[in-house]
Image 1 (cartoon, helix red, strand yellow):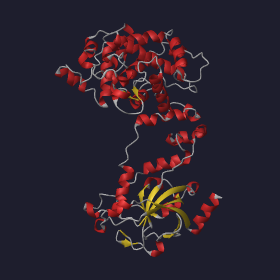
Image 2 (cartoon, helix red, strand yellow):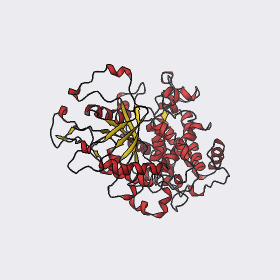
Image 3 (cartoon, one colour):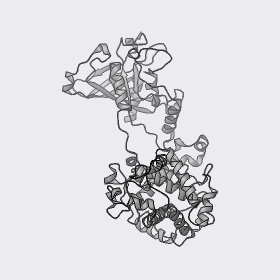
Image 4 (tube, one colour):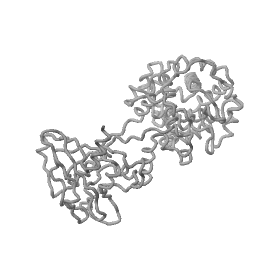
Length: 512
C-alpha cells in the first residue's frame, strides 16, 4: 500500500510531507538582517520522500570556485567542488552495500562475491531549500511555472508539495542543495535500476543563502567525530555475519579481527593489558595508557594484514581457510599467540635490571604509573614514560614480532600448530587452553628470545625526566606517524646486536 501511495504521488506531482516546527520563542529576539543575506527564516521545514532521479532533475547546486574572482561577500555559493569518485563510491554502495562496494571491479563482477552484497541504505536526509517565485540565482529569477507550491494543513502537521513536471534546460531549478550533492550525483539519469530509489529529504523554504551556509557548516564541520575506539567497539555486533569470514581482502574483516584481539587483551586476566587499554575514550589515568583504536590500527599494520607483504614481511594472521597461502590459525589461536607474546615481553621487562628500566622505576617516574593496572604494574612496562605504553611502542613490538616470526615461519613450524579443541568462541578459557599448547611449540622459545632482546632496548620516551639533550632529541624522532618506521628500524638494529644467534640472523636478514 505504501508503495502505491508513493507511486501515485510521483505521477500526480503531489508529495506528502511532514511539517516540522523547529523554532524556539527566544529566537524571536535574534536580529535578522536581509542586507546580510540573513532574512528571518520560516519557522517550519518539511520532511518528505522523493525519488533520487526526480530530486536530481529539480535541484540546482551552486559550488564555490576560483574560476571567477569575486569578493567573498559577493560569492553566495556554498558547495564544495563535486568529487566524481565520491559519487561513484556512493553509487556502488547503493547497488550492493558494504563490503561489496569496496571491492575492485574484477571482484565485483565475480559471481563468487555476490554473497557480499547487502542493502545500500542512505537513511541520512538530503537537505534542500525550496526557492520562492522571484528568487534570483545567477542574475535569473525563478518563474512561478517552475516553482514548487506548498499547501499546508493548518490543523495538522501534514503538507503537500506540488512539484513541477519538468524544468526547462535554461530555467532555474526550484530546489537548491544545501547538503547531499554527492549522494544526488550517485544516481545517473540513464540508470533505470536506480530510478525509483527514494531519498529522505529535509526541505527548508525560502531560506536565505547565509543561513544555508550556516546549515552546511553545522552539518559537515561542527559535529565532533565519533571516537574511533567507540566505533571499533561496535564491531562485535557484526562478528556473526558471514561476509566477515571472506578473508583479509575485506578491510572490515581485518578491523573486526583486530578489534576482537584487542578486546581479548583487555579482558583476559592473564594479559599484561588486562583492563589497561582505553576502550571507550577518556583520560589515560582512569582508562589506560593506549587506546583501543591504537591497538587496532597497530594490528592491522602488522599481524592482521595479507600473508604476502608488499616489499616486506606479510602478516602471520593473514591466512584464511579457503586459501592455500598462509596459516589457517583459528581466532582462538591468534588470540593465544598475541596473549603469550605480550605476556612474555612484560615478564622480560619486569625482570630486567637494565639502566633504562631501573630509571623508570624511580619514585620520580611513578607518579601516574598505577592507573587502571593497580599498584603492581611495572613503570618500565606501563608507566607514563615508557614507550611500551604508547601507540608507537605497541606498534613497534607487534610489528617486530610479526616480521621475525613471519621470516622464520617455516623453521618455526607455525603451520604445524593446530587447534584441537571444541571451543568455538574467544573466551579467557579457550584462549588459555590454546596458550598452554603454544608453549609446547618451537615458536615459543623464539618468542622468548625476541622478547629478551627487546627488554634491553631503551624504551624511555622523550619526556622522561633526566634524559640528556642528545637522548631527548633522539627520542623525539619517534613521535608522530613518521616515528613508527623509525622505531621499527631501531628495534631491528638493536636485535641484530643482542640476543640469540638466530634472532641476530633474522634481524640482519630484514631491511633496516
